[in-house]
Figure 1 (tube, rainbow, N blue to C red):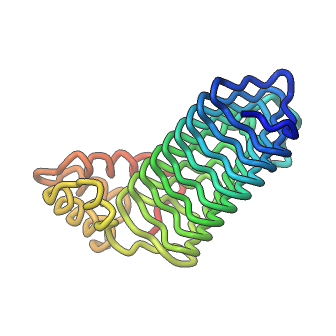
Figure 2: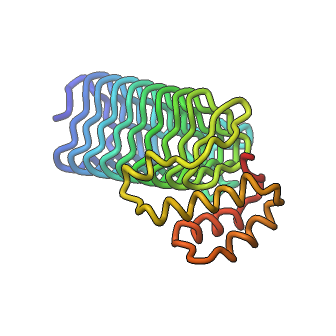
Length: 256
């Protein structure tokens, strides 16, 4: 399963069933789980831990030094979960000691060509990043987020679960869960209703989220006032509680 023209550092740990294509380089401190497939011309530096059944395509650069001028060679890491697809020319950097020392990609993510995931990013599960989406350092992307092609995320931004960004979106503030944003700079364009329906959200949940959206975006309230109104909603569903929890944790302001 290891091509004779691949270069594998003696300290790298490859589980049973891992395949590595020609001219790929697996560096020191790399661990790769069962069934993961590495195409040709991939470079993986360590410390990096990759789980099971991932597919990493040609010319991806995984686990390189963080692109941060403060980085001084400290032993930081990258962690990738299971069943991810990482397409051609993607770059995923290790973390920095200024933010816990780790970059993390969860499970079941679809990362298309030319995506950049910078140091100290935290990516959840079941996301889709379309071609050339780029994340600056310290960005958090929660579960089931879809980033349109060429979306750009400023450092320290957070994108809530089930949010959707259109192509060419430029995001410099936090994006609450469940909504769609678009533009330069990004603005809200309603709930991600179609995506939520496809994922099985109930009609009652969608109705309550529409009411919550109007409070946050159509009422003219400050963020603090909107949070109070959301907390007071009659019959609020768990998704509204999730929205409130996200808004209480905002430090950069939200896309409005």
